[in-house]
Length: 379
Image: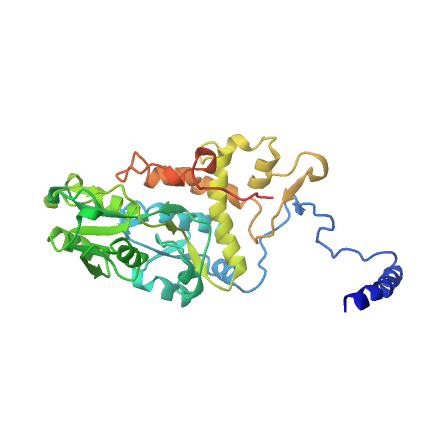
């Protein structure tokens, strides 16, 4: 078969040359598509806000509002503030997506969803995006119908105990009751970590119920993502001993990549949410903040001009505004930064050292600072 195939190549080549001659020496590239790998751009002022179909992007624009599933009981990430409005790191991610898609960070309907309802709510199309401290796992990708975008917070599971109980580590916690949320990755991680250590798991459907059980001494330990433990410790009631009465062990015994998720099956919407998140990270890499944004209007850095939707200033790109074909305005990154800020601003605003949580960047620092945050090229 191999020799027969080789003998046919002259005939195939001849037919190809004949077809080429009939087409005037070579087929023209399709209109609007690159024929040599060059970046595709649109002229300044040209409208790029067009939908590729009748998917979620078109639905959100027609509605004029983003519906975002959030947590409302985890300080720093998603909770109801003193003014009765949702606030937190995950909440601001929702606002960033609204700014990118609708040009208005406040065009969001926040919908608190319980842990057990996260994926059914997403599958039922009751929310457009889930931004609720949710771990990206294989099973959730495969069986829950969720598609996770770029990770926004690299976390890990830990253990919190009362200082008065005298536990020095998890290995000291034989024959104890450990409380956690049901239907989460923490249950499986708990069983794995306590293999060979006798213990009794106690699961609850709500974080508030765990706290009540913990205060009532029904739990010896409370296990969850370290960020959530830090959040609950920061607001632990003074009448129950306050934050100083609790200790979070240094040990991290799982990987918990947290981030927004959308429903499977809509690549356009996935790209929109994903590149909004990436844009927050890239803005911090460039050093662009909500405070200094205007200073970059005259930048000669071509990468930054492309990122902010500014026309090129040299060579073939002169006067051309780059459009990556995401279905968003070419200056959507600028709108997001102006209205919400960059990734670092979101972190410092809700989670950083000057907040009640007092978290360091750690693995959530930029890759240039030894962290895991890395933005693919915007070109």
